Image (cartoon, rainbow, N blue to C red; front, side, top):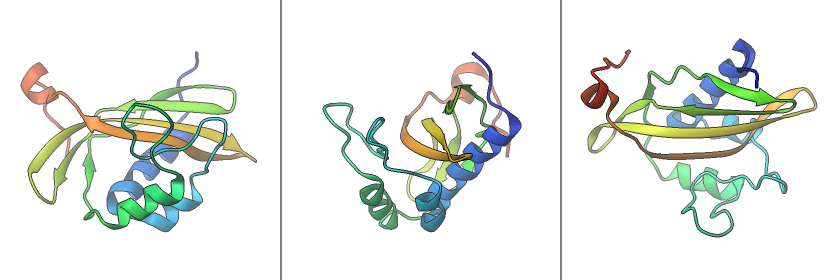
Length: 136
């Protein structure tokens, strides 16, 4: 399966920045509620998606802005579907540095990439576990 192109990776990088910087108009215009894949921003992993696009954006309004570091998106695609699994770290407004695992799935709709699913979970501290130094 082919790796994502620089254009696709730029979309993913911008999208992740929109999420953590709370650029919610951009999140809305670069996402779609997709009945086939069912968009969700936050999900318990059980049952149907917990949030629609609108609900996810409303939730983000209540969370202080942050910033991702070292997300360097690289993923895979097949036809009009692309997906990325990323391991950025972030300086949280409360609680300091946190290492994350982000999954992002996008579909090409009328020639434009649109996020149809994303979720974030806490990841292994790669610096502590593998001796990697996070890029700033």
